Image: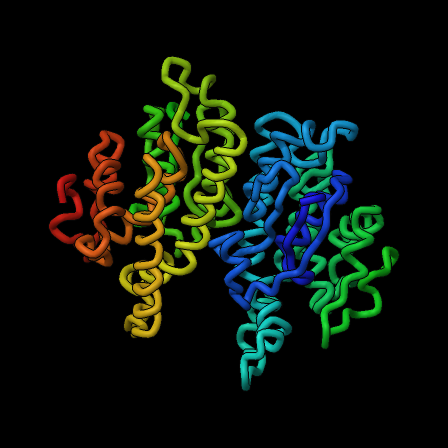
Length: 233
Length: 233
């Protein structure tokens, strides 16, 4: 394998957080797309859990999922990309890192379960997976959209009294949150006028160079709203 | 606070994995029970995510969820319990740790989503939470039980060619798996005769001293099968 390789899906929030991280780290890599609902035999041979993202490193390590990927990169970043700064993963002391990891779970588990998974399924994945006769479930849409408002308020609350979500420094907590928020924004699910503090945080992230490639992605049959790729939305 | 304190629920697989870990570490602590479906205001003040377990340390750290708890204990175990051996959390090099973390996700995310969460809800939580008119959903029970067989086969497969699930040494991957398997065994969901290799692994874990307290727990209105607390089942 010539390069590090990330297997991802453009509207997968977990994959997006790792793509942002790799871009922040400036770790050269190829990206290949896998539709997670296909359960392709070749993909299951790579990751028997069938989940995204998967990072294959030039040193032949195969890292399955955000948790093994981020903790491995935090331990080994110096060896992988010696010329760059300490990566924006888990900065600070062990108390700061516990807060970062709490927020990573908040977005990758709680926000995913309460919002992102359902909205992605109802608005994109069900149709993309060719499930015949699928119509979006309005009860699920209503509950998920109500939950989404709580998560945006929580981002706003954290942003009101910290510089970044977990503290003074940008961390993987911000990138995990951005993975979900950017998918939800692609779906047109966010009324930014109602959430000025969350918007300020997201605007700051979106204007970073690492965000560029992500905002260029499009999936067939579903266009994002006009403000989606505008850093000054 | 006089002691370290763990807030948990007896049939929560994530809590169980941490109770096993604290027992392996011989870290003195009190245990208090919280029913996660109650969303009590006082508990949400401790962990706004409303999830279990929560570990409050004597040094006033509050650690919410298995991910922050385990990574913090791995970093700080020497300071917390200086007299004991290196804890059985993430032994080995960074490649071994990536494998341990992959399997932690396998059980805490995949097995939970495909098996444990549904079976606990259908067979215990729905009734305990007082949901009126709840009858177990047979489609969900059938699908979850079918998935459970795959997870037991996977444990057997790993046990056939490794000493412990992630390698030569016991790790938190074993304790994460045991958190789920012990809940499922309490529910009487496992036909051990069909899974001799998984049984051998579980028997080895169950005979450890750290398991004793866990196996003594009972929840009102639901008794485990006779073999549940027998190490030679």
